[in-house]
Length: 296
Image (cartoon, rainbow, N blue to C red; front, side, top):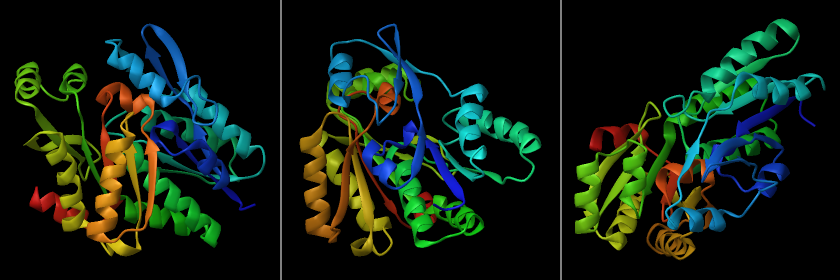
């Protein structure tokens, strides 16, 4: 066992068994579905992702809340008591207050465990973008990276994670305040689909709007063609909200047109799904994020 533990939260949307095998500790995040509170724990799901999206499709609503300091202290302390240092790779601070709560919890714990190293890196990422950074970091740890080396790697490579998403139903983005009511209603009537990205600061923004679902999926692939760095050598992630067929379509195009072979297809969980609704498709890869910013 290495002398430090990688910790993240369940917004990373990594499959639970994969995270377990890589030695990643995932802190569950809560959501309230149709008035009932649940924890999103990828190893101990209360119900499947497909069931969650089916409930949303019936018109039910879901909201989320940040992880508080007490929960962070509980999860961090179990490893500090084992004599391990900590590297917490957080959900973007632009999208949740959880990052700041974790930072405050760490500041308290540093006084209680002065011989331990507690490091927080804001991934400036969301969902499978966060997952890609965390997964790759865990692989680097297994290769023998020290805590200091991995912190430097994560801090540098968080700026290379390119996140591209599209959604099926604009009404969920409207409820979350991402787009206005007029935009949502007109877009729905005209079958306009937004293409979104997570920017350099870690905020979710609308990049463009295209006509129809297929064009929105093809736009994700075009962005990878433009921005990916050494694409054939990459391990990428495609996420979906109960839309496996569309995720497999994107994967087939990426293999055929870009030459990527190592593709993880995974459900996007209820924390992120609460804000995007069913039908979300995401494609994340390492690339020229600075170019992405300038070309947008």
